[in-house]
Length: 203
Figure 1 (cartoon, rainbow, N blue to C red):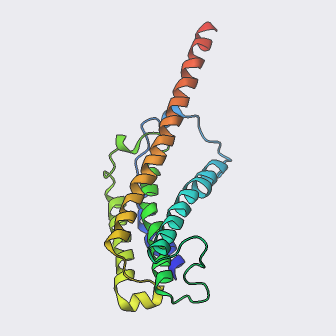
Figure 2 (figure 1 turned 45 degrees about the vertical axis):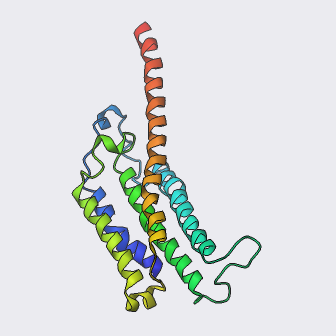
């Protein structure tokens, strides 16, 4: 049920919002795509599953271990929940892992708005559809962790202020990491163009 929450609930509206994003101003500077190239090409697959998938997984694991450590676990001890999936520490840890996926998605949807340009160049909150999607997914994760009937269905529990403090930082960490990568890519492309210009003028 938690996987369905992500796939059908929290993912959908932000993804639809991305479909309304305007093209980057430098899109015409790039070479045209091959008409035979699929939309899910190797570059997109690597970026989605290896890069963003890795960042989301790291955030989820961090949140899971944060809850386990807060509950009293430390290396050398068996983790809470082994053989007892109703253990309150384990339930809180899995709830944190789920919530972390949702909050890392916020950073990732911001990052996906541009290919190379900084997202701040188009305005971090300028896409209203994405903003609505973000508010909806936060509302949904809060709802399924607070309402007792939904807690039973999704195997969740209420989170405290410390939990939400950690979760609130995650989108901005994801954003900062990707902004750094984009800056490196832009610098590399500028250097490539500058080195190519003298060669073309010599011809």
